[in-house]
Every structure is written in structure tokens, then in C-alpha cells.
Length: 348
Image 1 (cartoon, rainbow, N blue to C red):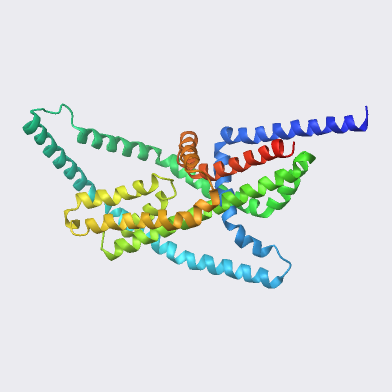
Image 2 (image 1 turned 90 degrees about the vertical axis):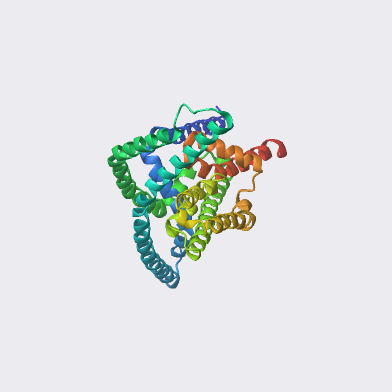
């Protein structure tokens, strides 16, 4: 057998082994979710923390000291607000019980007016009571949550242990792991694979960081606005708006619902209710007109139809987490298709 034939046989064997390895890794995502979920969260956190970590990849003692000092200062500055925020959210959450009976009374009153309207106008009587069904659903959901609480606490404890562990080793060994993994990649694909790996990390990390900044801006605007108009639960509603804003398209609507419900059931908020609606509208206009185009859209560079389709597909396969990662994943797949197209057609 000639050297050329041996080389071709070796390349084919390397390619087959590499493809099988990728299939095994992707298959593990579905087989071992208890490991993949904390590892995925740690991986995302590592991408966000990389700019800080790069300060330590230097021979300069001064830069290492400056990086360590900046990290300590950052942790200290974040710790106190985090503690105070937790206290405030706890106090506001305890006040929710005050609104639950009012919400039930509000729904029953509106339902009674609606049934009266149907009877007077169309001489029609409803045969079911959706309010009772809604309350029963809420009670059943509460029982399910209470029953699931021990498992939820166990999962939370497990995540709190595994995520820092994985994050430490990702930050510590990422370079050596990447170097060893590239040795497995067939020689003809090393350069292209490294380029795609770098682009994926960059796009994914930049997107997550941009969404975090975007959500923080929206939450900050909502919180400050609610404090100014003296609306109940300003911190809790602002945090809810920030978290739900991470979800594409439906996030702002979901984040607005709690504030709307509170304004409807609390008659003392009639004077500030229009101001609250105006505040949410302005916050989302600022987000859609300025924050999103500047921070997010330039990173993904996707057609709106592809964005909508990727969000729907992501939600179908992985729920909320799928909606969050679908857009940067779609951007990477678009780049991958472009590279394959270039390799096949432009170089032929």
C-alpha cells in the first residue's frame, strides 16, 4: 500500500472517529440532563467572565494584581446591594398575600357583571363559572408546587454545588482542553474547526452578555419609574420585567401582566394606573428602538423570520431555555452553513 493510500485511509479513520465523538457528545445532552444543565450554565457564565479572566493571562505581575484587586472590589460592591435587594424582595413577596383575596373578589365581581350583561342583553345564562375553575386550578397548582418543593430544593442545592465546580474547571482547563480536543480533529478541518469554535464562543458570549445588559436596563427603568409614581412592589416588578425580558417577543408582555393585575385589583391605584402603563410602554420602546438594535441585533445579524422560527423551535424542544439560546445558536448555524457553502462552491 502506497503512502498516499495509507494517508487517505488514516484521514478517513480520523474523520469517522471525530464524527462519532461529536454524535456521542450531542447524545449525552439528552441522556444526562443532570450533568448537562449545570455544565451548560457554568459554560455560559465562563463566557461572561472571560473578559475579567483574561487579565490574569499575562506575565505582568502588575496586571495580575490589578485584576485580582478589581475582582475583589467588584464582589464587595455587588454583595451589599444583593443582600439589600434580597431583603426588599422578601418583604415585597410577603405582601402578595394581601392581594390574592382582592384578586378573587375582583374576578368574581367582573364575572357577575358579565353574566348580568348577557342575561339582560341576550337572555343567555352561562352554564359554567370560569372563576371557580381558575381558583381551583390555582389551588391544585399550589399543591403541586408544595409537593414538588423538596425535589426543587434538592435540585437547587445540587446546581449550587455543581455549577461553581464546573465553572472553576472550565476557566482553569479550557485552554488545555481546547488544545487536546484539536488534536482529535482531522488535519484538514483543524483550521476551520478552530475558527468556528472561536466564532461560536464569541457570538454566544456576546449575545448572553448583551441580553443581560438589555434586561438590566429595562428592569432599572421600570424600577425607578415605579418608585417615582409610588406603585406597589417596585423592586419585585422591576426584577420580574428584567428576567422576563430575556425571553424574545413574549418576555415584555409576561413581565407586564403582574403590574397590570395589581393595578386592576387595587382600587387605590386608579390615579397612577395610567402612569404605570405609560412607563412600561416607554421602557419597551426604549428597548426596541435603541437598546436592542445597538446591543443585540448587530451580534446575531439574522433575518426577522429566522429569529421568529428559531425561537419557536427552541421553545418546542427545550422550553424557556431553548427560547433563550435559540437565537445565538441560529446565528452560529447560519455561519456554519455559509462556511460549508463557501467550501463547496467557492473553492470548487
